[in-house]
Structures are given as structure tokens and as C-alpha cells.
Image (cartoon, rainbow, N blue to C red):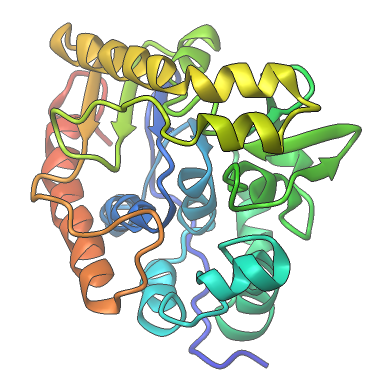
Length: 300
């Protein structure tokens, strides 16, 4: 049934102490940097008791939690360059830049096995966020609520203007990165006291206001709360980023992010560039993992 070698999940060997959170930014195909970082964690069997992510951060965390080393790299090698994965053709034909049926149905069910049973068996708290278009608030879905068809993750990845609104459990949902682009505030509110934050932008990046305000207002005229959040998203992103950097300065966080200048965008399909980004994440994940495990209470 599967067109590539099945990678079975492995149980974690080391669970980090309670109160330690893994906080994940999205970023479309930039998120394969995060997938490389997760590969470093899986090399040593490291698992966090709490993982929170939005958009591509949440999607790539699925293979990490199921313990399938190399699965995300297989997807980059064989499928991201496929027009069914991401292309303008998808946008014109189906209303979404990313081919979510291909990504969340065909790939895990026909091509690159995803170990759902191992995912379910790992005893951690995992949250995926998507914005409720009616209220402008983030709706958080827990691990035990994850549907077989990945609809919660799909909703979290549904970028405004290039994806359809997802109806689920009475909500009208879009990208979780709108109201909580770096979900550090939610992690703190949930009682975590140390955070490993994986970003997909270089140091010094700050988000600018959207240049498509007129299109946002026209497209989402029935969702005034959503419009307000999108138009102010740059302020939210920059505030959450500054909080992450403040926590790092105080010794309450480690930030992992690309050190080399980024050569990819949210929708890059270039296999060589994405593999290089993935491998960069893997190498930098190893470096930061050593720092993490040296801290008091972070040893096996």
C-alpha cells in the first residue's frame, strides 16, 4: 500500500521534567526547519511533557510525537515538489494553495506511513490551535481530540486568502498562526516555567503590517473580529516574539531558529533548498539539545 519504506514509531527514552514546554511557530514549508530540529530530539529519544503548535509547527510535530525518525525528510524528498502539495494550480482549482487532501489524506494513507497508534500511546499534552473566525479567538484542540482525518491540523494550517474556512464542531476556523503565531502566552498560562521555542525566521526578523488589507476586508466581510485580528497580526507576532526573547534573556527559555539566511518562503517547493533547511534544523537541534540537557533537572 505504501510507496516508501514504512517507518514505525519509537517510544521516547527520556521525558523532560513537567513544566517544560516545546513551543512551535508555523511558516508553511519553512516549517521543515522545525522538522529537522525534531529529528535531533528523536535521535536521543527526547520527549517534552507539553507540546503546543500552530499551522506547520503543529503538522510537523505529528511525526515527532509518533517517534518516526526520517518520516518528514521522506516527505520533503519525494512530495513537496509535487504540484499537488503546494501550487497556484491548487488555489485556482480547489481554493487552497496547499493541497490539503494530498497532504493529510493521500500521503499518510498511501505513501509515507504515519504511526497513529504510537502517536496516541505517548503520554504528553499536545495542543493544536486554530482561530475561530466568528470571535477572533484561538480554539485549542488537545491530543485526544485529534480526528482521524487531521481536520484540526488542517484548520490550523488554513492560511487566510489562500485557503478555505474550515467548519468543525460549530466553529469557522482558519490558521492558528493568526491570533497566536508563537503560542508562548498560552504555554505560560498553562503553567509551564521553561520553554524551548522553535522559530522559522532568522534573528532580527519583525513582521510588517499586511499589504492586503483591502482584500482581507472584502473576503472576510462577514467576520469583523477576524478582520481586526489579521490587520493587527504584526503587533501580535512582534509582541510574542519579544516575550520569547525576554524569557531567553532571563534563562527561562531556549530559542532555536535558522542561523543561516533563509532561502525559502512559506510556499517553496525546491527540494534541495528544503532539504538543506531540514538538515540545518537537525544540526542546530543537536547543539541546542546539549545545552538543554546540561541544565539542572534535564538529565536522564
